[in-house]
Amino acid sequence: MSRKKNRPQTPKEVRLIAFDRHPCFSHLSLPSKRTFMNIYEEHLAQRKARLLERAQEASDKSAALFQQEREMAQHVPLGQPILVGHHSEGRHRRYLSQMDGLTRKQIALDRLAEDLKQQAETVGTGGISSDDPEAIQKLEAQLAAREVEQATMKEFNKRVKKLATEEERKNLAKAMLSEDQQLMLTRVRFGKEGFPKYELTNNGARIRRIRARIEELRKSEVAENIEVEGRDFFYVEDPDQNRAIFSFTGKPYDKTRELLKQHGWKWSPTRGDWVRLLTANARRDGRYLCTKFDEID
Image (tube, rainbow, N blue to C red; front, side, top):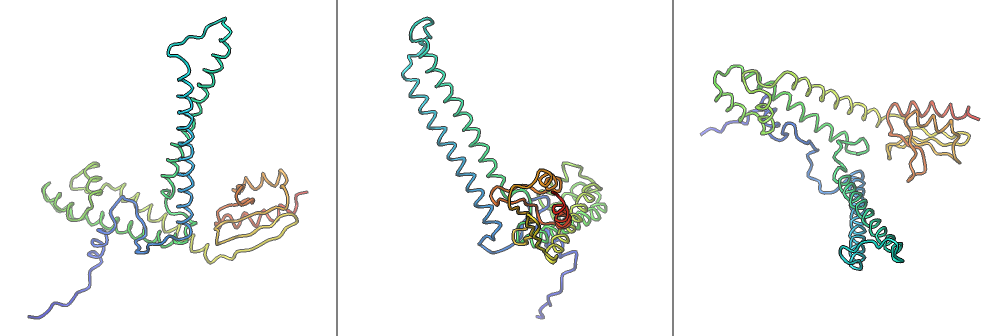
Protein backbone atom coordinates (compact mmCIF):
# COMPACT_ATOMS: atom_id res chain seq x y z
CA MET A 1 0.00 0.00 0.00
CA SER A 2 1.42 3.33 -1.04
CA ARG A 3 1.82 5.96 1.62
CA LYS A 4 0.32 9.36 1.10
CA LYS A 5 2.77 12.20 0.99
CA ASN A 6 2.30 14.90 3.56
CA ARG A 7 0.84 17.64 1.46
CA PRO A 8 1.42 21.25 2.60
CA GLN A 9 -1.50 22.92 4.32
CA THR A 10 -3.34 25.61 2.44
CA PRO A 11 -3.43 29.10 3.95
CA LYS A 12 -7.09 28.57 4.85
CA GLU A 13 -6.34 25.34 6.73
CA VAL A 14 -3.40 26.94 8.50
CA ARG A 15 -5.61 29.77 9.68
CA LEU A 16 -8.30 27.44 10.97
CA ILE A 17 -5.80 25.25 12.79
CA ALA A 18 -4.01 28.26 14.28
CA PHE A 19 -7.36 29.66 15.41
CA ASP A 20 -7.83 26.71 17.78
CA ARG A 21 -4.70 27.83 19.58
CA HIS A 22 -5.87 31.46 19.79
CA PRO A 23 -9.46 31.68 21.13
CA CYS A 24 -11.29 34.79 20.03
CA PHE A 25 -11.92 37.69 22.38
CA SER A 26 -9.80 36.27 25.19
CA HIS A 27 -6.58 37.45 26.84
CA LEU A 28 -3.74 36.70 24.45
CA SER A 29 -0.23 36.06 25.72
CA LEU A 30 3.05 35.01 24.24
CA PRO A 31 3.10 31.23 23.81
CA SER A 32 6.28 30.11 25.48
CA LYS A 33 7.63 27.09 27.34
CA ARG A 34 10.00 29.07 29.54
CA THR A 35 9.46 28.81 33.28
CA PHE A 36 11.52 31.85 34.35
CA MET A 37 10.49 35.51 34.45
CA ASN A 38 12.21 38.35 32.66
CA ILE A 39 13.25 41.54 34.46
CA TYR A 40 9.95 43.31 33.87
CA GLU A 41 7.90 40.32 35.04
CA GLU A 42 10.05 40.10 38.18
CA HIS A 43 9.37 43.80 38.78
CA LEU A 44 5.61 43.18 38.51
CA ALA A 45 5.82 40.19 40.86
CA GLN A 46 7.74 42.25 43.43
CA ARG A 47 5.25 45.09 43.16
CA LYS A 48 2.34 42.70 43.67
CA ALA A 49 4.09 41.14 46.67
CA ARG A 50 4.68 44.59 48.21
CA LEU A 51 1.02 45.53 47.79
CA LEU A 52 -0.16 42.27 49.34
CA GLU A 53 2.29 42.73 52.23
CA ARG A 54 0.96 46.23 52.88
CA ALA A 55 -2.61 44.92 52.69
CA GLN A 56 -1.81 42.24 55.26
CA GLU A 57 -0.18 44.80 57.57
CA ALA A 58 -3.26 47.03 57.36
CA SER A 59 -5.52 44.05 58.03
CA ASP A 60 -3.44 42.99 61.05
CA LYS A 61 -3.53 46.53 62.48
CA SER A 62 -7.29 46.64 61.97
CA ALA A 63 -7.71 43.34 63.83
CA ALA A 64 -5.54 44.62 66.68
CA LEU A 65 -7.61 47.81 67.00
CA PHE A 66 -10.82 45.75 66.97
CA GLN A 67 -9.51 43.61 69.82
CA GLN A 68 -8.42 46.71 71.74
CA GLU A 69 -11.86 48.29 71.31
CA ARG A 70 -13.58 45.10 72.51
CA GLU A 71 -11.40 44.97 75.62
CA MET A 72 -12.23 48.60 76.40
CA ALA A 73 -15.95 47.91 75.93
CA GLN A 74 -15.83 45.18 78.59
CA HIS A 75 -15.13 47.86 81.23
CA VAL A 76 -18.38 49.69 80.43
CA PRO A 77 -21.56 47.98 81.71
CA LEU A 78 -24.06 47.27 78.95
CA GLY A 79 -26.53 50.12 78.67
CA GLN A 80 -24.68 52.31 81.14
CA PRO A 81 -25.76 55.92 80.42
CA ILE A 82 -23.60 59.00 80.83
CA LEU A 83 -24.42 60.50 84.23
CA VAL A 84 -24.81 64.16 83.34
CA GLY A 85 -23.55 66.41 86.13
CA HIS A 86 -21.79 63.57 87.87
CA HIS A 87 -18.03 63.77 88.45
CA SER A 88 -17.63 60.75 86.10
CA GLU A 89 -19.31 62.47 83.10
CA GLY A 90 -16.13 63.87 81.54
CA ARG A 91 -14.17 60.67 82.00
CA HIS A 92 -17.06 58.60 80.56
CA ARG A 93 -17.35 60.81 77.48
CA ARG A 94 -13.59 60.68 76.84
CA TYR A 95 -13.63 56.89 77.19
CA LEU A 96 -16.45 56.52 74.65
CA SER A 97 -14.68 58.97 72.33
CA GLN A 98 -11.54 56.80 72.47
CA MET A 99 -13.58 53.71 71.58
CA ASP A 100 -15.22 55.57 68.70
CA GLY A 101 -11.80 56.68 67.44
CA LEU A 102 -10.55 53.08 67.46
CA THR A 103 -13.59 51.97 65.47
CA ARG A 104 -13.05 54.68 62.86
CA LYS A 105 -9.37 53.78 62.49
CA GLN A 106 -10.30 50.12 62.16
CA ILE A 107 -12.78 50.86 59.35
CA ALA A 108 -10.23 53.05 57.55
CA LEU A 109 -7.60 50.27 57.75
CA ASP A 110 -10.08 47.69 56.46
CA ARG A 111 -10.81 49.89 53.45
CA LEU A 112 -7.09 50.46 52.87
CA ALA A 113 -6.43 46.70 52.99
CA GLU A 114 -9.21 46.06 50.47
CA ASP A 115 -7.93 48.79 48.13
CA LEU A 116 -4.40 47.39 48.28
CA LYS A 117 -5.66 43.88 47.50
CA GLN A 118 -7.55 45.20 44.48
CA GLN A 119 -4.44 47.04 43.30
CA ALA A 120 -2.42 43.84 43.64
CA GLU A 121 -4.98 41.92 41.59
CA THR A 122 -4.72 44.42 38.72
CA VAL A 123 -0.91 44.38 38.55
CA GLY A 124 0.14 43.11 35.12
CA THR A 125 -3.40 43.07 33.70
CA GLY A 126 -3.19 46.39 31.86
CA GLY A 127 -1.95 44.90 28.58
CA ILE A 128 1.54 44.62 27.17
CA SER A 129 3.85 47.29 28.55
CA SER A 130 6.60 48.94 26.54
CA ASP A 131 8.85 48.32 29.55
CA ASP A 132 8.64 44.58 28.92
CA PRO A 133 11.79 43.43 27.07
CA GLU A 134 9.60 40.86 25.28
CA ALA A 135 6.97 43.42 24.29
CA ILE A 136 7.57 43.03 20.54
CA GLN A 137 7.34 39.23 20.67
CA LYS A 138 4.16 39.37 22.73
CA LEU A 139 2.61 41.96 20.43
CA GLU A 140 3.51 39.84 17.41
CA ALA A 141 1.76 36.87 19.02
CA GLN A 142 -1.26 39.06 19.74
CA LEU A 143 -1.20 40.36 16.17
CA ALA A 144 -1.10 36.83 14.75
CA ALA A 145 -4.07 35.85 16.91
CA ARG A 146 -6.07 38.89 15.79
CA GLU A 147 -5.29 38.17 12.14
CA VAL A 148 -6.40 34.56 12.60
CA GLU A 149 -9.57 35.84 14.24
CA GLN A 150 -10.24 38.21 11.35
CA ALA A 151 -9.67 35.51 8.72
CA THR A 152 -11.92 33.07 10.58
CA MET A 153 -14.80 35.55 10.87
CA LYS A 154 -14.54 36.39 7.16
CA GLU A 155 -14.44 32.72 6.18
CA PHE A 156 -17.42 31.96 8.42
CA ASN A 157 -19.46 34.80 6.92
CA LYS A 158 -18.59 33.54 3.45
CA ARG A 159 -19.71 29.98 4.17
CA VAL A 160 -22.77 30.70 6.29
CA LYS A 161 -24.46 32.61 3.44
CA LYS A 162 -24.65 29.38 1.43
CA LEU A 163 -26.53 27.47 4.13
CA ALA A 164 -30.31 27.32 4.21
CA THR A 165 -31.25 25.86 7.61
CA GLU A 166 -30.58 26.97 11.17
CA GLU A 167 -29.19 23.56 12.06
CA GLU A 168 -26.56 23.75 9.31
CA ARG A 169 -25.48 27.19 10.46
CA LYS A 170 -25.13 25.97 14.06
CA ASN A 171 -23.08 22.98 12.98
CA LEU A 172 -20.78 25.25 10.97
CA ALA A 173 -20.34 27.55 13.98
CA LYS A 174 -19.39 24.60 16.21
CA ALA A 175 -16.88 23.39 13.63
CA MET A 176 -15.20 26.74 12.94
CA LEU A 177 -15.65 28.99 15.97
CA SER A 178 -14.49 29.01 19.56
CA GLU A 179 -17.01 28.99 22.40
CA ASP A 180 -16.48 32.71 23.00
CA GLN A 181 -17.15 33.49 19.34
CA GLN A 182 -20.27 31.32 19.29
CA LEU A 183 -21.59 33.06 22.39
CA MET A 184 -20.88 36.49 20.92
CA LEU A 185 -22.54 35.50 17.64
CA THR A 186 -25.75 34.28 19.30
CA ARG A 187 -25.96 37.40 21.45
CA VAL A 188 -25.66 39.76 18.49
CA ARG A 189 -27.57 37.91 15.78
CA PHE A 190 -27.40 34.40 14.47
CA GLY A 191 -28.44 34.12 10.84
CA LYS A 192 -27.16 34.04 7.32
CA GLU A 193 -25.30 37.30 7.81
CA GLY A 194 -22.89 35.80 10.35
CA PHE A 195 -20.71 38.28 12.16
CA PRO A 196 -21.88 41.90 11.87
CA LYS A 197 -19.74 44.26 9.86
CA TYR A 198 -18.75 46.36 12.85
CA GLU A 199 -17.05 43.34 14.47
CA LEU A 200 -14.78 42.97 11.44
CA THR A 201 -14.17 46.73 11.36
CA ASN A 202 -13.29 46.91 15.05
CA ASN A 203 -10.98 43.92 14.87
CA GLY A 204 -9.29 45.41 11.80
CA ALA A 205 -8.67 48.60 13.75
CA ARG A 206 -7.10 46.57 16.58
CA ILE A 207 -4.81 44.88 14.05
CA ARG A 208 -3.66 48.23 12.65
CA ARG A 209 -3.08 49.60 16.15
CA ILE A 210 -0.93 46.61 17.16
CA ARG A 211 1.09 46.87 13.93
CA ALA A 212 1.71 50.57 14.54
CA ARG A 213 2.86 49.89 18.08
CA ILE A 214 5.23 47.14 16.96
CA GLU A 215 6.70 49.52 14.39
CA GLU A 216 7.14 52.23 17.03
CA LEU A 217 8.93 49.82 19.38
CA ARG A 218 11.24 48.65 16.58
CA LYS A 219 12.14 52.23 15.74
CA SER A 220 12.83 52.88 19.41
CA GLU A 221 15.25 49.93 19.51
CA VAL A 222 17.43 51.31 16.72
CA ALA A 223 17.13 54.99 17.64
CA GLU A 224 20.24 56.83 18.78
CA ASN A 225 20.23 57.58 22.50
CA ILE A 226 21.97 60.74 23.65
CA GLU A 227 23.33 62.21 26.87
CA VAL A 228 23.37 65.96 27.42
CA GLU A 229 25.07 67.83 30.26
CA GLY A 230 23.68 71.33 30.74
CA ARG A 231 24.42 74.18 33.09
CA ASP A 232 22.65 72.64 36.09
CA PHE A 233 21.05 69.49 34.67
CA PHE A 234 21.91 66.19 33.05
CA TYR A 235 19.67 64.57 30.41
CA VAL A 236 19.94 60.91 29.40
CA GLU A 237 17.90 58.57 27.21
CA ASP A 238 18.19 55.19 28.91
CA PRO A 239 16.96 52.27 26.74
CA ASP A 240 17.51 49.74 29.54
CA GLN A 241 15.04 51.50 31.81
CA ASN A 242 12.98 52.71 28.82
CA ARG A 243 12.96 56.21 30.26
CA ALA A 244 14.03 59.72 29.29
CA ILE A 245 15.54 61.16 32.47
CA PHE A 246 16.33 64.70 33.65
CA SER A 247 18.60 65.03 36.69
CA PHE A 248 19.27 68.38 38.40
CA THR A 249 22.05 69.42 40.74
CA GLY A 250 19.53 71.19 42.98
CA LYS A 251 15.87 72.06 43.04
CA PRO A 252 14.91 73.28 39.54
CA TYR A 253 13.36 76.70 38.98
CA ASP A 254 9.57 77.00 39.00
CA LYS A 255 9.57 77.67 35.26
CA THR A 256 11.74 74.58 34.68
CA ARG A 257 9.36 72.37 36.64
CA GLU A 258 6.41 73.85 34.77
CA LEU A 259 8.03 73.04 31.41
CA LEU A 260 8.78 69.49 32.54
CA LYS A 261 5.18 68.89 33.58
CA GLN A 262 3.83 70.45 30.38
CA HIS A 263 5.91 68.03 28.30
CA GLY A 264 4.97 64.89 30.24
CA TRP A 265 7.84 64.48 32.71
CA LYS A 266 6.99 63.37 36.24
CA TRP A 267 8.96 63.49 39.45
CA SER A 268 10.07 60.04 40.61
CA PRO A 269 10.77 59.96 44.37
CA THR A 270 12.43 56.53 44.09
CA ARG A 271 14.90 57.73 41.43
CA GLY A 272 15.16 61.32 42.58
CA ASP A 273 14.81 62.42 38.93
CA TRP A 274 12.23 63.62 36.43
CA VAL A 275 11.28 60.73 34.13
CA ARG A 276 9.15 59.99 31.09
CA LEU A 277 8.56 56.85 29.01
CA LEU A 278 11.16 56.73 26.23
CA THR A 279 9.25 57.27 22.99
CA ALA A 280 9.91 59.18 19.79
CA ASN A 281 7.94 62.15 21.16
CA ALA A 282 9.88 61.98 24.44
CA ARG A 283 13.19 62.14 22.57
CA ARG A 284 12.04 65.14 20.58
CA ASP A 285 10.66 66.96 23.63
CA GLY A 286 13.73 66.12 25.75
CA ARG A 287 16.15 67.57 23.24
CA TYR A 288 13.97 70.67 22.90
CA LEU A 289 13.90 71.17 26.69
CA CYS A 290 17.68 70.88 26.85
CA THR A 291 17.94 74.03 24.75
CA LYS A 292 15.23 75.82 26.77
CA PHE A 293 16.69 75.08 30.21
CA ASP A 294 20.00 76.74 29.39
CA GLU A 295 18.08 79.94 28.57
CA ILE A 296 16.34 80.07 31.96
CA ASP A 297 18.00 82.37 34.51
